[in-house]
Each structure stands twice: as structure tokens, then as C-alpha cells.
Image 1 (cartoon, rainbow, N blue to C red):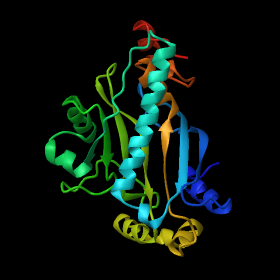
Image 2 (cartoon, rainbow, N blue to C red; image 1 turned 90 degrees about the vertical axis):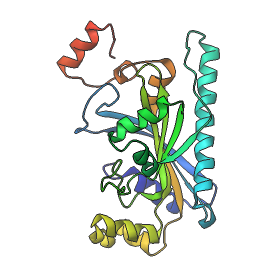
Image 3 (cartoon, rainbow, N blue to C red; image 1 turned 30 degrees about the horizontal axis):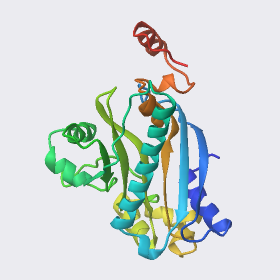
Image 4 (cartoon, rainbow, N blue to C red; image 1 turned 90 degrees about the horizontal axis):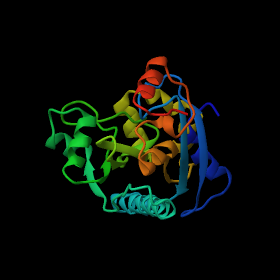
Length: 258
């Protein structure tokens, strides 16, 4: 598949007749050839992607936060089960979620970069965070991070971040949100200067209310493995391609890349 998985999932929910409260998940394997490589990014991307049909009444912050807590609970249950099976694993994850918006984070740390703000906030004791409203332009005139205008509703999305003890930083494990409806798509296309997309097949269907209302996201498989078993490099849990400098540096540090 060479186009957006998010769009494919929403189309599939319509095509296969899913109804509110039900959905699907996919085992995504992709190549991002232009990815900037470091210890948490690889050209090979593996995610569990999910999408489910919701009702108009579900398009609110309370339902979004309820879903986030459910996902975090499942992740923590998995970590607990792993630790019981392998006592040498010492990683513990926090079930208590702190919810904060990108604007609130900028107001708290106006002189830091977006990534530095996330780590600074979590260093204060918030070990699990859902950072909301990603894609909006902040009062500084900048964005915390980019989001496509035809994907999530920028008022109802976010990233699940967990504190990584090994790396000493905020660590994103999932990007998710309630998807655009007709009104939010029109607004976000206008804000992004992409109104010509209204003529594309997927966008026409959405603007004509022919697609179900949905929410969904992706959960990084290698990211979860890194976090739960305490690895410092994504290459310790997945096979990928690395430049010679990375290979030499990891070998010198005793880090075995697959």
C-alpha cells in the first residue's frame, strides 16, 4: 500500500460495514526512506494501527481521554506480565496519565524546543503524559509538531508519551486522535492552504458525509519493546539498516544491533 494507512482504514470501515463501537487493527510494516536516523528512529517502521467507528456524541475530549487511559492501561498490563515472566526486567510504567495541551506546554516552557518541553514536563514527575492538540498553530506562531489537515481533528488528538528511564527523556509510543469530520476538515484545509484537496476522492466522500466518524492511531511495536526491556537503541529490537558511524559507535559502547 503506497498511500495513507489512516485513509485506508477509514475507507475499510465503510466498505466492510463496521458500526459504532467496533473497528479494526492492522500490523503495519513500512519503509520511510527519508527518515532521519538516530537511536529511536529507523527507516523500517512497525506499528499496530487501529481505527474504530464512533458516534457524533463521542467526538469530545472526555471520550478521547477515556480511550487514552484504556490504551495506557493495556500497555501497563503488558509490562507487568512481562516482568512476571522475566524477573530480570525491571522497567515499571505509570498508569496515571497527565493530560496537557501543546499551548499549555509552550506557556510553561516558552524558551525550549518542543521536544525539550516534553522532557522538562515529564522530568517534574509526570511519567505518563497525553499531549493534546498537535497540529495547531500556537501563540508563538509556531507548531509543536506537524499533523496533516485531513487526518486528525487538531482539537481532539495527541501523543501518548512515557518516561524512558534508560534514555532520560520523554518517549512517544503512540500518536492518535478523533478524526476530522466535515466541519474540522474544511477548517483545517483552509488553515493549511490546502483547499484544492476538496476535489480528491477521499475528501469528497468526507465532505459529503459518506464516511463514518472514526478515531484511531498507531502504536509503535519497536518503541514498546525498547521501553519495556530497557534498550537504548531501536536497532536492538528490530532489523534495519544503519550507517557505518552508527555501527562503530554502538559496537564501541557494547550495544548489539540486529
